[in-house]
Length: 457
Image 1 (cartoon, rainbow, N blue to C red):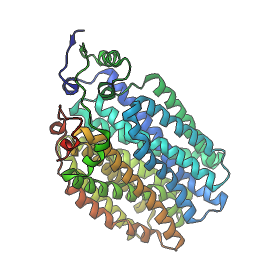
Image 2: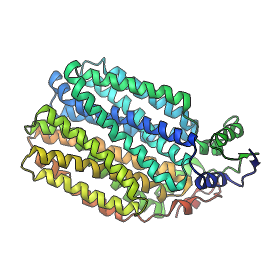
Image 3: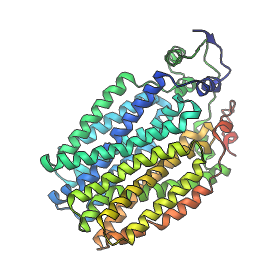
Image 4: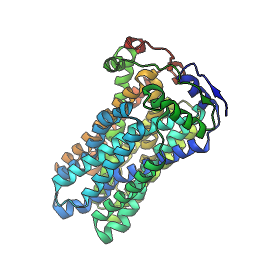
């Protein structure tokens, strides 16, 4: 295998973008999808366990809402404060640390005997999930050819709702026989298994090695290139860095600032409204007179629809604008909330609407993942996307708590879903307003490290 001298880091990425995907790259994507799957299990298992936990501990609606939101609070903190550490210590060690947090949170939840202890365990689990969810798409993007990047990120995103499907089946068959703690035990075991896989096979980020240059960086870069079947390099390309104290200003200044506000609105509404439904659906259906089995099926169908929605979005995005598809999915998601708010309570209709809600809700999430990186120059992209995800998590924290308060005020299921319908129109308009530069145009090879304003446009 020959060796070359690349001009800059983009030269190496251009080779990866123009080459077929190798077995090693497919392995990286596969591991990331597996990690996303267990994240989905760990995230949604609480919604399926909420009803038996509330019954066992005599919890009111507000307390259940806080339990459902505690994991999302951890995810927000993980996205905002844990994920950015990957730029300093590397994607691989951070991913392993986040998986360890999730294992600890799920395992300790088995031992809890009260509300406060379980809430703390959910925060711990959320910290791990939040760090991973914000980091893994970057790893996939770095190891994927550009023409397949959107489809592979959509495949990764499908892991979260598919993990929710597994959580639903476990809740149906395990919780009834062994209690809600058995669901957490299964989640802890699956996460531990994926932790061992990550330790053994998850590689370091290529971009991290090129930019941060830890010890043996050239040797490690060439090892990764060799596993991808690419030519080795004789020396590392010129590294481009931006002052860390100016990155935040670049995200919030000029046109980047306008894009950020619009993107934050979209993320806040998408995560807040959909995760309210995903968290509360089984309990609200049971409160409306559905059987326990039907209620769990409603939540499971949301997750099943989510897998279909993400994969469908990934295919359609190869042909149509990801931004316009996301706008259309916001409208569709809003209509599903309206449908429940005016429904007469037909079990078949509600279950069909739940499936449609999963399709549109997860397609919106996949769309935002696809849109967000294209909006910013490479020098500020990770910070900008991480902050947007954190804003979304705040929405996901607020909405279940709000739903719990409405439950305590004796609002009906239809009325509660009606409250969450109008924000979808606002988010659709915000997403429509996102113009954004294309990724290829934003990858500038030379930024002055002392002039962070160069990345503000």
